[in-house]
Length: 143
Image 1 (tube, helix red, strand yellow):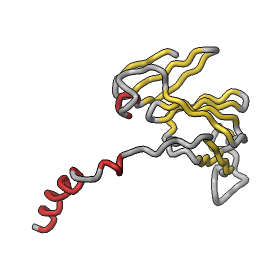
Image 2 (image 1 turned 120 degrees about the horizontal axis):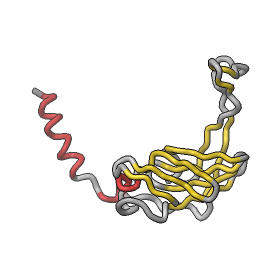
Image 3 (image 1 turned 90 degrees about the vertical axis):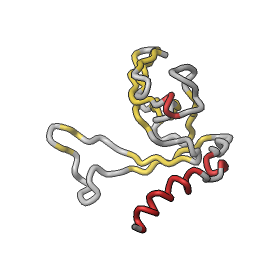
């Protein structure tokens, strides 16, 4: 019986959460990145192959910008990276550099105020054009 009461009360507790909890922090004046190399296998740092795949390198990336993360897609050319977050943010940086730029896609389905409208899931870059697929809208946009 107590479990049923707890389950019934849970929606009431979440309904009255203060709006301040949902406000996003202002982005920093300069977005910084910190890279930490990661091995393919923590137990065997010399492991380089999985079947026919050759592991070249990997990084864990942290940022001082709360918007950074949730990367859905990434395009790497030489050392320049264009990544796409799950909320429609474009993240650009060079591997090994500490600086990054972040900006919202200029256009797309719905408004940028709701993640579900700009839930970007894939990215293809060819020359000076990019194609982005949006999950919730089932649409592909060319930029």
